[in-house]
Image (cartoon, rainbow, N blue to C red):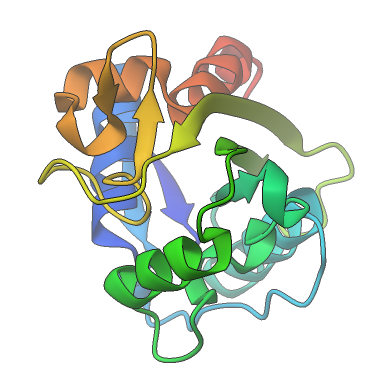
Length: 195
């Protein structure tokens, strides 16, 4: 088993990524298990934040590191919450408060178009000059009320027309296949034999 450090302490994200990588012979270790604190995310783009997180975890662990920076971009809000998705309603992080703020900010706006973005970066070591970078987008719209009990984050508000369901109503296997993170991971997985 090849070891990879996941530059995140998000248990649900860890579960999604482990399901995709375990069959390929990768053991994903959450950075918290190694005593690595979360990295700063000072940038306004997903790619810069993901790269900073991956380099931070690789530097402190001495292992290859994988980082995902993802978020929800809502057209009527100029792309917000974007890179601030996890902390949209402030600290401490709260999915419920983030969803409430999103609905309040959207109000009765007729334009409900939105998409999730996932930027995944894998560095072989902290100073890797050629990190593997993969990106996925998942398009849908924001519902006026929560629907579904699965997933996390904005999933209960994110309606996917092709399935006539919210992301929170999809089974894990389908979500892992079609979501922004699933798309980015498939791109990354295609390039992993190069490691």
